[in-house]
Each structure stands twice: as structure tokens, then as C-alpha cells.
Image 1 (cartoon, helix red, strand yellow):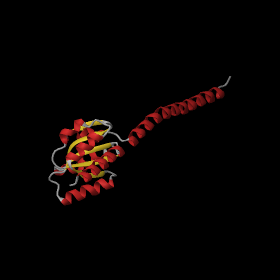
Image 2 (cartoon, rainbow, N blue to C red; image 1 turned 45 degrees about the horizontal axis):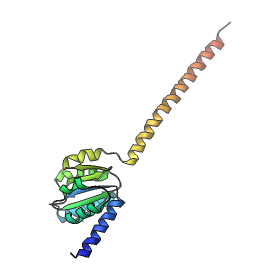
Image 3 (cartoon, one colour; image 1 turned 90 degrees about the vertical axis):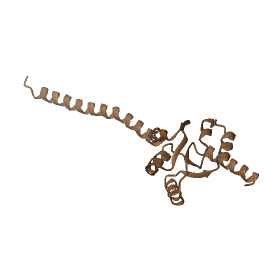
Image 4 (spheres, rainbow, N blue to C red; image 1 turned 45 degrees about the vertical axis):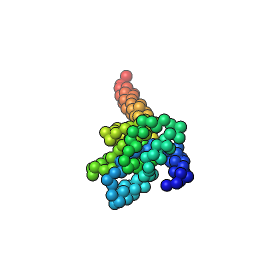
Length: 172
């Protein structure tokens, strides 16, 4: 590969790193063509961009980035696929489905501005909630007290109505 081509790839990787807030480094060793094709199809369906890269070029793209990716340098060995995403836990769920066959394995991830190194971090990454899930939880929490107040007011109104009716029907 020519030096100019390598420079272009490094620039492209740098732009992709800026575009996507989360990415996963996956060990693609041992994946045959059918498995790779299936993985790419599932990534496309989940709005995940899968890129197979040379480790040295990715390392140089990391060094050129504004973010310090030094905790990930040790993971750049073997065949590496990078899964870029806007939803932090989407690739973790995808990898968990593929983990039943033993490949591909998670090397590391950069999600929610944190580093997760090692395949044992997959459960922690799966547990990360997306922005939409957090908003839904907050809305549910905010609705709960309001529903309780409305319910109490409605039951209190019925009680007051019953007391007034009884007092009104009482002979004097």
C-alpha cells in the first residue's frame, strides 16, 4: 500500500471517530466469509458501521485524535474490526448474540466517554442504557407522583361528597 493511501485511510478513520461517539474493537480472527457477511448484515440492520482495519493505521488515527485513546493501544493485535455506532449498547447486544458461537470476541470499547477493555466487559456494555431508554425511565418516574396525587384527590373528593351527603340527610 502506498504512503498516500495510508494517509488517506488514517484521515478517513479520524473523521469516522469524530462522527460516531461510540465504537467497539472486535477480534475478527477466525471469522469466515459467511460469518463476516452475516455480521455485516446484522450491523447494517442495527445502524452500526463495521470497518475492518489495519491495526497500525487505526493506532495512528487514535494518536491524531483529540481524545486520548492510549488505553486501547494494547488491544490492537490480530485481525480487528471496528463497530461504530450512535447507540452505546447496540453493538454489545449484537456481539452477545454472536458470542454463542465463540466469535467475534470483544477486545475493547469506547462508550459513554469510558474505556471498556476485555471480553468480560460485554455484560457491562449491554447494561448501558441508550438516550431513549433513559428518557423513558425519567418520564415514567415523573408521571408516578402526579398519578398518585390525582388518585388521592379523586378518592378524597368522593369521601368529602359522601360525608356532606350524610350530613345533609341527617335530621336536625
